[in-house]
Each structure stands twice: as structure tokens, then as C-alpha cells.
Image (cartoon, rainbow, N blue to C red; front, top):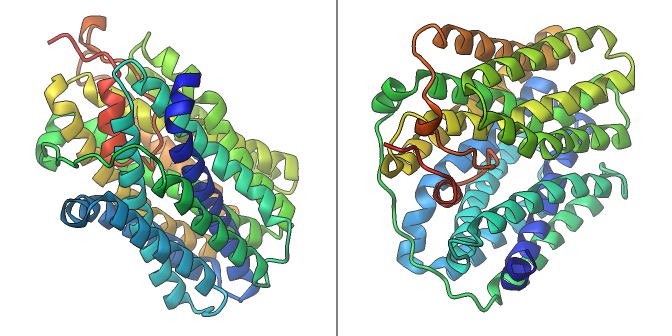
Length: 412
């Protein structure tokens, strides 16, 4: 582990600073939108913009990197992120914010591709798993830690936006000065969505619905908190505790998934998350209940993405895993782009607690579909399954392919 840190500390530090800025952006923007008088439905379009941009950036960034190189792409995209962050309070208009969120999402997708390519190139087959685990931990810790910044200044002013812009600007330094040579980017094999659905209907349906869940929890949480009348510190804690749940349960759920029918685990996790959320809705007048729901939702949603990818890989040859994962990333991105808009609409119609109703409903649909799929196909044998590879739903195809290369492929 020390060898990995010595090799990659600059890149990991840069990504930590970037995630501090990005985590701060999402929470502060949700609070500031309420201050500016934007309702939940309006903010849902603003928040959705990030995922639309991220989806586009995931597919456009490789071509940009091949044309001008990793260093120029990273510097250009990170500069745009920094500029967008500082412009939010200067142009408090929903359309402008949505456009800037799209730009930020597009740019972060490209930044992730660059950073993940470099980390992958700096790793050996023996250290790649540790490197990716540290990278995932860095991302989650960055977002959790960013919530502490929310309480340092008044969200109605400029200070927090300046802080997030500075964090992203400072993040350039360790990454651009790293001695690791920029690698050549090679596009992976592709798989049609129709073929992917034939291979794993549960993988496609589950990933799409999970996109709505993930985007709801991790982009609309601050909007929910503002609509619910929570204080700034309570909103920050709610966002932080959701990510903490994912951090705590990512590896235990992965360990369990390698030892049982993954569909049963998917069904059990999502059913538990749905029941807990629906039951907790009766107690959202108590802040402890809100925090408990946030923790459970994070604990279910974050590991579930990697779990669904691992389940899909159980029916694939090793050579097709990366292509299938690219398709699942696209499906997840579409769900994530639609999710906030639907959540904002139901919150506008039925109130803030409809946030939990929507997320719980999506989890219940995944559980129901997983239960039905268990009646349609037998579970693969232990020899046919691949190992669970921890990853976040924000991973680009570069990180997914690297993660899959560290796991055991099915023996076929």
C-alpha cells in the first residue's frame, strides 16, 4: 500500500481536491437555489444537467485525448470547471445554472478519464487493485469532507463558490506536475444495448433504475433538505452520512456477493432499502430518522452499482466484460439524467417527503424485477462467476476496465 501511495500520491491528492470542490458544489447549489427562490422542480433540471453533461463527456473525452493529449485536455477541462463554479452566484438564473452544470458534468467526465488513465498506467498487475481501492476511497472521502466546508460561510454569499473554484484550481498542480508519463488512450470494444439486454435483463433494468436512485440521493439531497427546512449544517450532515453509508458497506457487500446468488443479494438489499425508506417516511419530522434513512440509502445504492456489474459479468466471457460495462454505464447515465427531473416533479406535487417515496419506489421495482428474474434463469455456478470489483457509479470506462482486470474472470 505504501508503494502505491508513493507512486500515485500526486494524482490522488489532485483528485481529492477536485472532489472537495465538486462535493461542495452540489450541496451549496441546492441550498443557494432555495435562497434564490427556485422550487424543487426547477432545481431538478439544474441538478440533472450534471448527469447529462457527464454522459456526453464520457463518450467525447477519449476522442479529445487522442487529438490533443491528456495534459491539454485536463488543463482545459479543469479550467472550465473552476470558471463555472465562480460564475454560479454571478448569474443566478435556472437556465444558466443548468448550462453550467452540464459543462461541469462534461468536464468532470473528461477529468476522470485522464486521471484514471494515468493511475492505470502507473499501476502494475500486482498493485492495480490497491490503486483503484485508494482512488475510490479518495473520491468518497473528498465528497464527505467537502460537507464540512458548507458550514464555514453563508451560502447566500460568494465565499463558498470562491472556495470550490480555488480547490479545483489548486488541484491542477499535483496532477499536471506528476512524473508519470501520460499513457496512450485506446478505445475499447463496444456492445449493442440490445445484445446487452439479451445477456442480462436484470443488469440493464437494475442499472437504469439505480441511475435514478443514485442521482436522487447524491444530487437532490440538498434540495430535499432545503425544502424540508433543515439547517445548513443538517443538510451537509445528511449528504455526508449518505456517502458514509456507501463507504462502510462497499466491501462487506462485495465479500458477501462472491459467496451467494447475486440476484438474491440484489433483491434483499433493494427490498430492505425500500421498506426502511417507506417506514422512515412516517418519522421525517425527527432529524435522527432523516439521517438514518440517508445512511441506509447510501449503504444500498453505492455498492449496488458494482454488484449489478459483477452479476452481469457472470454471464460474459472476460473479453466482453469491458464492452458490457460500457453499455451499463450509458444506461446508468440515462437513468441518472432522468431521475432528478422526476424527483423534482413529485416533490413539487406532493412535498419534500416525496423524495424518499420516489427513491424507495425505484428500489422496490429493482427488488421485484430481481425476484421475477430468479424464476426465469438458474444462477451460475461458482466456477462461472467473476469476483466483485468495488467501483463507484461515477467511474468511467477506463476505471471499470481496470477494475475488471483485477478480478477473476469466469472460467469459460
